[in-house]
Length: 81
Image (cartoon, rainbow, N blue to C red):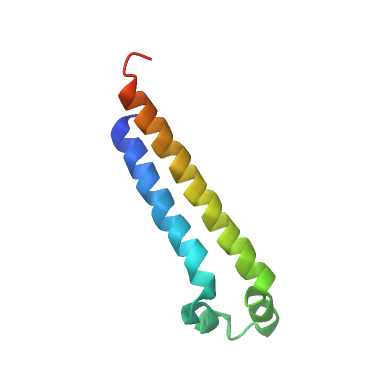
């Protein structure tokens, strides 16, 4: 993977991770009008367990971004390796 693609991957992982960590705990998550016709699904999505699972996926994305950034910095400091 080239350095430009790696930087794009890092940026996208940070953006997606940040959104997934924060979104379940905002009023936007509570007021999702797409779930109005499905009260059972709405209750499941609004549960703390579902919110925690989504936030956990966001943390995985942030850890992946940190790992990729470390990889990028390691290859820049050791260009012959």
